[in-house]
Image (cartoon, rainbow, N blue to C red; front, top):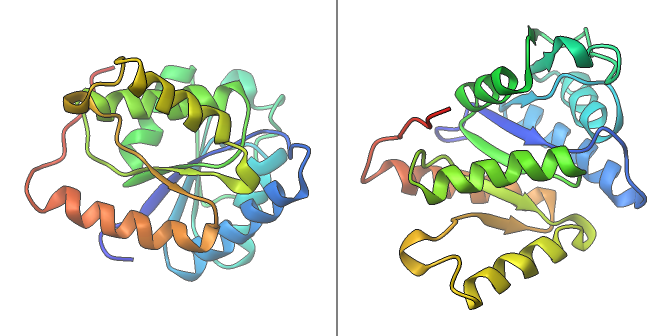
Length: 197
């Protein structure tokens, strides 16, 4: 995968109501491993987080898990990953996830997933980095958020010169090609920026 060595995946610590969610997480994990792209994720063994990590590992890929100490038991820290980092708080977790990844993908998830995704969209909007951010709209899960973002544009709160740039794909097979193209385009004219925490 041209330029992209590791992808940070944000997703739920539960599997959700639709079986398509966990199937997509497993499929995407296998796709990452097949293409030699490492996974950076929250370090847990539950839900979609566990599904994508196990799929990468089972397919011979590399996984970096980053988990705060207080979540080790609650999220059932996955100790079989190649690179496990235990941090003190959520801020350190998010900073390391950002630093270790070349791109970001949001699979279905809850409030934590939403918060992580929106933070990346904010940093892109403020031009603090140009790493690609992709919303994986599996089974229409992110439809309400995408509608809200459109509403914000219509109401003048996301202005054309301060666009929150992101990609949307509804099939996991289309994620890597979209990210690879965006990654190359982002790096051609300008250098990557570093977010301020």
